[in-house]
Image (tube, rainbow, N blue to C red):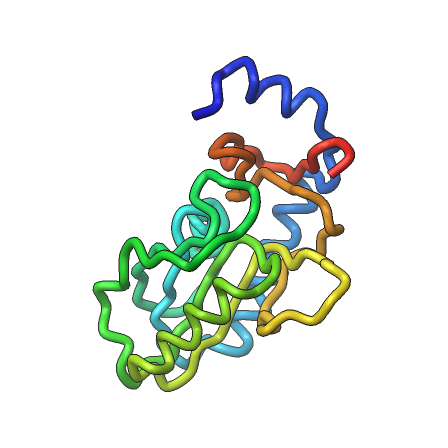
Length: 182
């Protein structure tokens, strides 16, 4: 676990790469796009914990149509900074059979986690799975999945804020930061 002073030092040394105002604009834009596509679908919205908490909390009040909401928790990271094997911590309680699902996540990094979650939901009987990510990281190579809705494209750096963390800290920031030199 990171100590308080370590967290402050990381933030003080980081580069702000997206302002809070730009974050808010991106969320509003993506909410409009989702409304245009899914406004008549009565979708089941599934947030991927814990990164999608902030994004979902800002996105859902802007979706002006009926929906069901639940969450799931699958991760390759834990508190690490590099991905490992996919671990399913919590499956959705809501039945996905025959449903239009909107899967909401914080960042599309390598795409392995989101692709595996989508594949699992389809195997469980979802009629269709749409994906919305707040950020798509430009990693310079192909990914196994392309998000249907993207808030922002970020550079290939270690980013945090607005749901994305650095060693468990700073998910709560309203802007996006990148570690110095990474």
